[in-house]
Image (cartoon, rainbow, N blue to C red; front, side, top):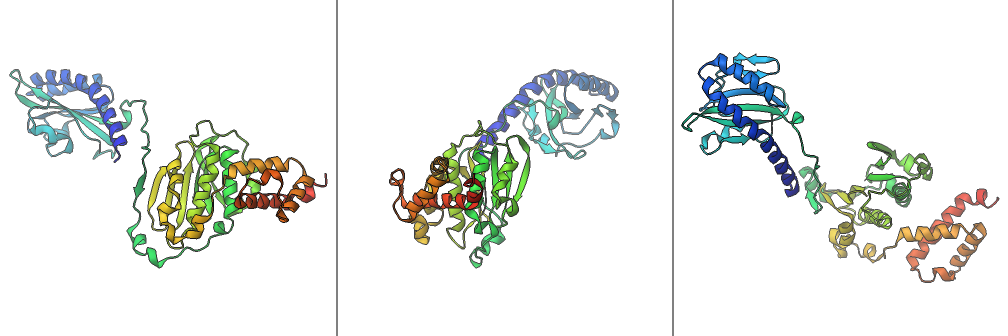
Amino acid sequence: MSNSLQHSIHLQRQLLKDLLGNALSHYAHASYPQMRDIKALDNHLRDTFKALDHSKYVYVLDDHGVQVSSTINRFGADEEAIGRDRSKRPYMQHMYDERIDFHLSQAYISRNKKRPSVTATQTIRDAHGKRVGYLGVDYDLRELPHSDVIYEEPSQWRQIKGDPAIRQGLFSQERVESLMDQHIDQVMSVHEALIVDQGVHHIQIHFSSSRSTIWHTDDPYVYRLLTMDELSNTNICLAYPRRPYFERATVPPPMVSKVLQQLKALRFADETIYLRSASFNIVNGKVSLNFSCDGTHYLNYDEFLEKGLEFWFGGAAFPDALSTPAIDQYKLDLLIEDIASQGCIQVNKLLYAMEKENPIDSLQALSMAEREYIYNELKSVMEIYEGEMCSL
């Protein structure tokens, strides 16, 4: 369990101790005179039960952990519980320490209702300070007050091992090209458009099974499943309203393309150890990676980009992949939009010039990879829309 989660639990337990400890001290002290008369003790515990907010069961034990009262609940008194030995219960393991007056147990699953519960026990002492028993109060965790501070996922990189059976057979397997692999550029472009322009804040891409799951900011409580029938059709973007980039996002828009391109690279970098699935959340900035060895990594997007392919596989394994320069797809897409807005005639002139390896001045400073990207994108646009747009 992470330190952050432990700290969050500790704060919540301290809140409950402060709330419950003071109340139980008074009622435990008042229980001592009634301990030799079960009827009087039960009547006292009925009043105690009514006064203790959120309690489920109230009872009294002797100094050996054996119940000497009925168990009081909202339905009345359970007399069959008298004589029940609770000394071996986890919440009674403090009873051997004479110095402890109040104890709040760790959360446990109750025997009867199978609910997450905690038990608070307060030592009962006689007039001379000698321990003579315990006042026990059981609480259902769902009904106790909680702080308003929600647990925050730690930012550090986390690695979780997967199925040992898969790891043992790792080097006898090889990546099989999926339908998504065959259309990977189209798929990544669709995902980028959905995130940057269409209000999607979380995606989970299953490369091997050729499907994606997405969550939209307009309806974040449900997910939507996209198969290759949808992902291979750019019109899928029309099914989602255009939205400004999500205001809660911690990932800058230009980084979305970089993350997606890095995921693509990890998918194809090695035929034995390859990316099977990945998720990306622009709000907390987390990227998760599930590899063919069934190991899963969770890390921040900026750390993911800094690592590069060398970190995951080692440069010697795929020098060609490493030698391919990265391109800023977001920047290039803006340039493509500007070029396309000039009309079909100008776009065709530019394509002709690039085919003759004589690009216009505005493209001279770009690398060969960037020029190739622009050429392919513009060519694709013209092939689809030439008949419709240029005839206008």
